[in-house]
Image 1 (cartoon, rainbow, N blue to C red):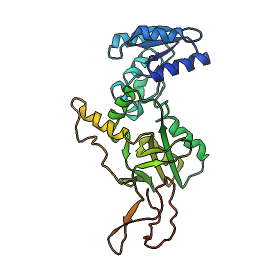
Image 2 (image 1 turned 180 degrees about the vertical axis):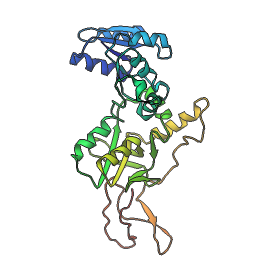
Image 3 (image 1 turned 30 degrees about the vertical axis):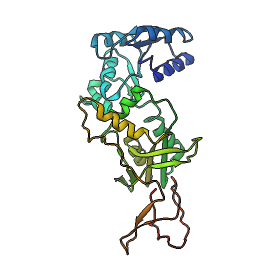
Image 4 (image 1 turned 90 degrees about the vertical axis):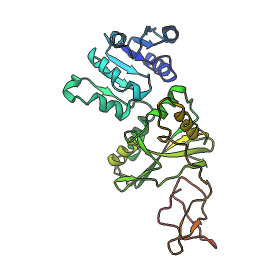
Length: 309
């Protein structure tokens, strides 16, 4: 028996369809709205059973996990779920897979030491980011240490209300550092700027990329031996980051200064301060996500060795 929580959500429904298509075993679908879960179950090949379950009710959660071989969690938000479902799964003798969770959930689950886990297995960050965004670059590196690795994750995917909550609340040092890059074995704070209206490989339209050095990207840098790693969240609109910041300010009890709207920046050519004059001078190259190649032109300053966009 495979138990799947959050089956009525966008990700949970897709996970249920894939698990059923692979024929991995009977499915038990859990959600607070049992009618919606039943509708998902009826549409699956081979059938599935829908069960009402509230993650905040320990009795319902334990009953849902009982008899399962694996419990897959597609419910959120991450910072609220943490290790709640994982511990219920372990208590029922099941292993655990979470599309999110990240380090915050792992920290909570392992706080009692390895002995408290009872020999069970938990896999966190089994989604796209974090998850595939950390595995794919390792495969591409093929064991060779890259000089520089740029990671762009995002696009025009559906941004559900739950995704927005997770984006707002899964923040802080255990998730990543904004506007930072990884250089020479450490985090280089405030070294990157947003890329506005750029064309990136794999994205069919011009996009907006916001620097965010995730903890996954930091681990990726260490594991591959990369000298430099730049990680970007990619959106089709440059309005989204500010909209999230404004939404954060509306949350009850939220610190209004903890996630302030991104300062307005000029998206013209990059600039730097000329050492001998102290004056800020714009360079002659267009904004680009790859290393800039400068052409000498009248009035153009001498660029540093590795100019940042």
